[in-house]
Length: 483
Ligand SMILES: Cc1ncc(COP(=O)(O)O)c(C=O)c1O
Image (cartoon, rainbow, N blue to C red; front, side, top):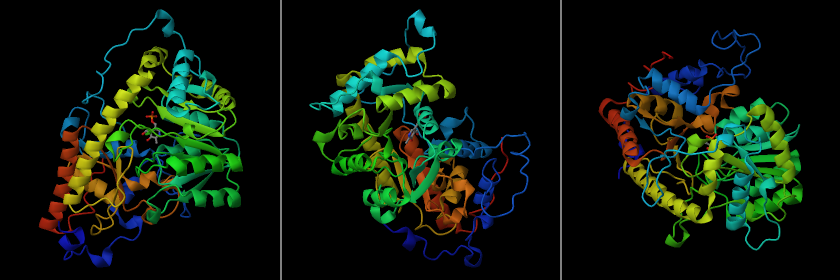
């Protein structure tokens, strides 16, 4: 395999004009011109007619998913021609049949009473089923057991996170870069909490550094820590001894840990005997009602459209979430909560998880192997989630930044998510070229295999164009028409 450095060594992209600042890059200017993405740095602000004409209304900035879909639409994507596009940006798993898993639900029946509102904390039987599953999987033999009072059903992961964020007081709330894009708006929307960033380091494989976190807790007075584990977008996971240390740190320092375990099913074992394993901090806490611990999980049965997720934590937190839910979202769909109850039966869960891990591990391995053949080996391959955090720095400029690579992929009918969206609060500060996520793009293995191959073919075509035409055709000529 020829390395990309070798392959493109004779190509120079107008060295004298190579962009160093976002103002010199067309892809970055399109981003800045989108409502809500103007820099809030030191430069003087001008009125942006797209976002400042409705009195009192401020655009929060579109999440990565919305920005990427809008840019795809500007490049010809539509919901009727979606099958012609490869969606490596997809933030959800494929929802069709997979080998070894049960049939996909296609209809539900429910009693007439379920047409009523459900309680804001959720239907009691479902809460009980979640508690039972957690006790079965993570708390066997432990004195302190979960009950329904430790579970709050929420209408989706983001609604759960917003309910939690709404009840965080005026305290330093730590988050890391990179992490899940929606934390950006979530941490900004609730003005009481004070967000404090820490950038994860490449040499530490973009993993949460517990030693560093301990220092930050002591020195900065952090009181709440938010992290996805497994981590979107890097696919790294804190587990075992390390996860226990994190739980102990939270207990010893009275720091509340909000662990978003949305991808806790999507872990990829190296050994056959480990298929079906999951990971949760719920395993390491002592007392379910005193541990300052919040765990979020969705209906990982590849049913994201159901909008059924839950938060597990101390009783006292659950009652606070009932209150925030009553003004934020009003609760999850009553009929779908009832339909979810049988899906939590431990034996059913175990079978589904094995099928899911086999299927997604095969897709991950396939994509990693094709990327390596294209000269894009992944330095830190994901151990979990269905995302690949691809470093493009080895490519020649301007393809070596995620936003420009993304624009070039759009020309080939492929969507991915530029790394800067995982730099929480990216649009509001500093030159985007200085972001620790500038050189990255996130590739999703969520879609079915044939769609992943279409995306990999698109990446191959971009690289072939470099071979054939050099670099002068890259970095400009992007569609700007927003629809
Ligand atoms: C880390 C993480 N948490 C939570 C969610 C929430 O998802 P939803 O609101 O779609 O249930 C996602 C979705 O991509 C995620 O990546």
